[in-house]
Image (cartoon, rainbow, N blue to C red; front, side, top):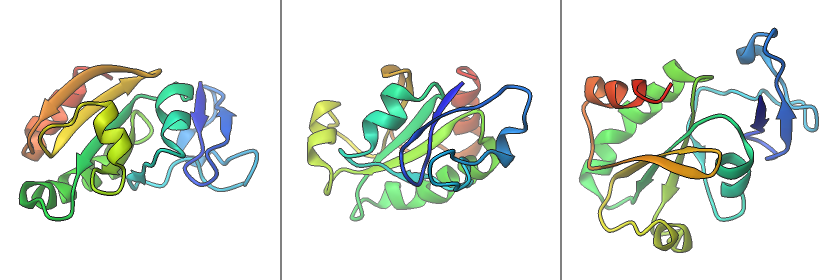
Length: 140
């Protein structure tokens, strides 16, 4: 499986026989999994959404959005508990307006699940933890 490094965005081939949580980037030597959502930008989005084979769960959010703020701990907890089955990333729609426009984000929070560059699922609005995990379980 090919995985993008959260630190340098370099691509790494992850052998299936090695524990994923112990994997390190071949380029920068940083861990490939941190248990924290990545801050996605126009500069690193393609490496994680298009080139990485790991499903990417993206939270489109903004700092002024109350539901976004209340959902943030659920999203962070999912990153801690569900990596390495998924990669989790956040896109601040105020700072990354090009990405928000590219994916036609009209309301926030909006969740999208990408597999090899394609949107395979989309959910508008914040979800309680159990509902979020159930939504994700369909795509493992």
